[in-house]
Length: 411
Image (cartoon, rainbow, N blue to C red):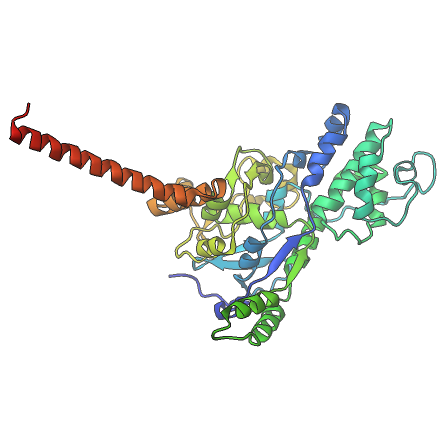
């Protein structure tokens, strides 16, 4: 039996939506191509250095949207709860921390004084003293700027990564002066809880008024024509579908959290390669699933889920984990299906069962990935069956021919 849940949007009220992301991991490739080996080595020692190992992730608006439709009511506005397969699970700053490896502690008592236009000012030397600029101008500045100072080039790369990858702002939104001020002192910048700020931006973007969206869609869709004019109806239904953009770092929510919390999702739509920390650097997204496939995965009964992501023994030694998780919390065993299991071996067995599934799940997984790699997979698959059937028939004819020859005594 599944848990009783209070849905934010009831199933009959589900609606289609187009979602895109203003965050992009393209900056990682640009940074690696732009910086020298010495500058890259310095960049890897910063708070964002390990994230340069991330693969180029593809955004899936359909996965995000259908996860959001499975959101349940929660009184804690600093986190989100969902239900899949009759089980509930959470997305909070703790999950975000484990996924990204970013500092998610509280703001330290910092006193940052900007070197306004004085000698050595980062804004003066690298940004031409500009105060008002946005992501649209930041990217060409990064690509065209050069400096004899390795530290200044790394600072510019960090700003580029922060604004376009982690904060994923609209290109027209101005970059906060505080971010530039913090870069004047690299040690101060590295200690700042960027993970907490990034999580708050991402969470605020995810917490849309879905009820209002559902109401607007269903009111508009009722005006579509019906009956014989089906083509016009479909066209008008498509016109009812709205779209919006997510800000912050939705990749952490979209693939990595969803794939870690629901192993069967991870096995079907993404690939995990390696066991590095943080978790996000291990995931590869070869493509984006369509709405039909996402719905099929999320609607499966008895799906294995991790109610809350917990730090592994290796993660407990990381500073970003120590700053957020208490010692008591670290000692708790991981939650599986919403119940804490004392038998850790049993937990790992359950996770592997969830990951690989039964024979039908494995076959569906193979077929789905084959279709993404080879568009004419179904046609080839059907031709293989026809060829196998032809071979069997020919074998049967050979046996009958041998029998006739023996009866006639030709041999």
